[in-house]
Image (cartoon, rainbow, N blue to C red):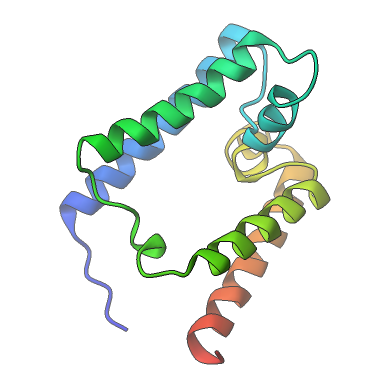
Length: 141
């Protein structure tokens, strides 16, 4: 499999990473909270949710809807996949975030930036599982 480095794709990825980092740092600086999406989602959908948690989730949905309305492309990994496969993937990700006590945003973005050893261990596990999953999907199934 040949990988072609497209400068426009690299620029988009860099811009996305900068925005994620800035949003995570902003939430920590302004609100004193970690931008762990799974934790925010769990609290925002429960009783007694803080307004900022609901606003944070609404912002994620509005950004996605805005991108779709602007005609921006859907990530390549989502095109051509069956709905049951995507649903299964969502359930497995949810299970993993519960098991790991956090998600890629909480551990990978915020936890590593704070030099958390627990986050480092979690990131190593979920990246390892991701690598094995991709290998199995591409070479076994």
